[in-house]
Length: 251
Image (cartoon, rainbow, N blue to C red; front, side, top):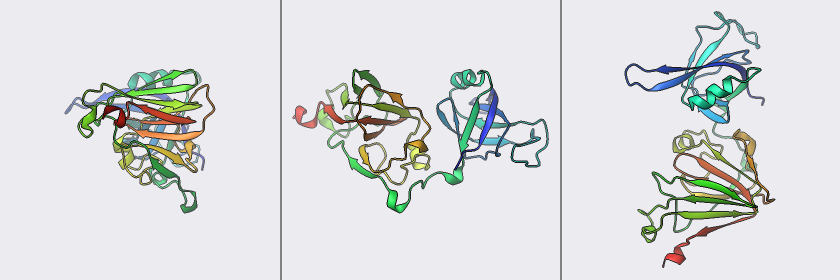
């Protein structure tokens, strides 16, 4: 199903007088459908939940809906203001799309379910501040992060765990965090055995259901690896992987 689209005209920061939190108002026109609160807006490589929709300034819609006002609407999101402002300044004005909340969650049929293979036995990333860093090294992708020293005591003296993905063809870091996963905003919500783990996923991974762009690499591996960190998720296509130090190294 083709996603609804609109033109982004402006990004306006709006501060809440009570709690001083700032949310962003995105002004849209040329809509093919009216968005609703809870829809996921895709703009500038970000997946942003629409927290409010103002329909007081609407006049016309490409679907022919009977709208009134000045011909545009505002939607409220929480996102990176600098990135969205730069995106909105493009010429011609950029298009944005969104995924309906009614279409989120169950994205697979019973005969098309991916299979999850749990990989991080005896180790994991820190639950609060893992601080994952990614770096391409020729045909490999190196990912370093702080270990979970509370659950796995043998890592108390270890500063970083290093994951190396051999023969990496592409990778991406998505905005899916624990709230998004439990809120059914990840295509694997309800399918992955648990949040915060490292998996290899086989079968149809339906990569197009997440619009985050891939970073191309020099390798040719196609195995799908998926790591849920605290504030983001890492997806990697590679030939194989290794981790250091392993639990056995620390015995």
